[in-house]
Length: 469
Image (cartoon, rainbow, N blue to C red; front, side, top):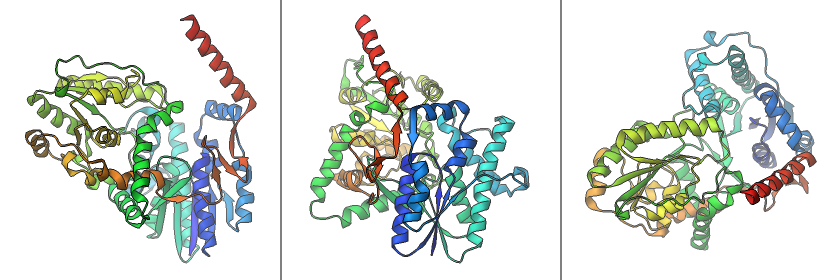
């Protein structure tokens, strides 16, 4: 079998995961062809400011090493480009157009803050770049597939433009494809999916198989995973734009009648509708929240909404999320804590009588904190805790009628085990304690001297401002 690896982005971890898989397939006797679109994507899709920022702040050593690594492990390597298109978008089949526009929405969501991008409202130049990217990858992979007997297409994630085009080409040609994704909480492991890493049902299958096949120490390892989940916000503080130290108390007389709702990030959704096959409330988080809030209010609860903290996302994204949830909160008479408020989510959880979410993994933290918890959508962990789930309006009503149950932590052990040890560990590349990926001791993505100096200057300025204030 010929394994066609499609490098779909310039991120170091993306390339390393795909290289790890390609080297593994070659060791099993398969022919491997690596199509590298990372440089083309960098030139074609990034704006000048992003390119300049990357050049000044970082050195990507992997870019130069990839051809040599592939040569060493007997992998055919091709640096690809995007071709000028003979056919316009309107000359393509209707389904081609639909998939392309869906992938555009996914690719731009974390930039624009919108789940649905109106392709026609984009600048003409941007339309051309996006279409050229998608169509080139699709057509080139179709050509590769047609030139070989038995092919498997492999890429990462599947919900963005290049990887989505690879999946669409595979599906159009009725050939197998594999989507890779980081496994668990930390760089250094990956999992392979035959449908999608965003498929709830496939995630459960992979997770449960890992649980059943693990050794006798699985309980202790699973407990370690759940403890790591509780520490996750602290582990990730460096990338978040808030320090989560603003402990705001609920202004109510009875904390047992407070409910805090933690929305999920709706922008991060698959282009192909995998989870919508089983998603509740028609896959509409706002609808689920409205139904829940109206019932909770009838039972005397005060509703609070904590908008998802910004992390590394831009201000446009967080401003739109705040405005969106503010409007919904006003409709149902709920109070809102905005994304950049710095409010400590754990403190809110601690002081609430009930914690609710649609599909966020904060429900796991809530259960581990021994808080009554309500989950409104199918997730990779919800089948372990059915007492916490309400997937229809009628089930929400029953949840309040029957009273809340605390869940034994052991129920979440399969999820915790996969979180800490799931997937396949890197064999060729190494990862240190600060998440630097190395190849034989060489750091693949390092800060420049200018970047380090800038960081030290920023630290001094912040200390000075703090001292002055």
